Image (cartoon, rainbow, N blue to C red; front, side):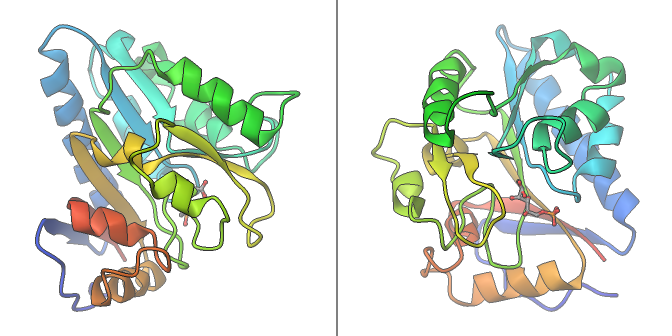
Length: 239
Ligand SMILES: O=C(O)[C@H](O)[C@@H](O)[C@H](O)[C@H](O)COP(=O)(O)O
């Protein structure tokens, strides 16, 4: 399958291949390079990653990269409000596939906390993450077929708050009725300034979603990924 012919906006470039493993490998190499560049300077590197299913091969390949992982902070771009024992947990996916091998030395900052509401948890995570090396060194976003990225869902009542970069929060709770669980997400303020922004997507339906997002770039509320297309990012797509 070939990537559909999409008129990508300025600032958006594309790495594509039929084979998902090849794209995951190219992405892992790129992210490792971006982190290594940051680690040549004093201080720490920070990487924000998505959950879901697409990133698994990428995680496994990145985990083996020979970096000074002890100086890398790993954070999720979002989390479903479930314990790590739940199959839907993004933190469980990161621990199982990324925080292995050399990357096991990274510092992981999960977003879910037991015994508190998503709103309370978001406030606690926001305070905890203040000590990270902002702006993020790199972020790897995913895409839902509704145009969401992270947990910036079009039907979330908190979407405008999460997209308002004048607000101080880097983490906020989201309650999109379309989703089985409440979510916690990094806000646009936290994500937009990342040194390197990647969008990792796989398959024809996600390519079609991207095409729709590129066609009408101004309606961000309808497809929140559009805000990142305006900012510029590199798309990594496989069939
Ligand atoms: O918690 C999540 O679901 C993710 O962070 C979300 O933003 C994801 O990237 C997209 O929903 C794509 O998910 P898939 O890769 O599973 O298609």
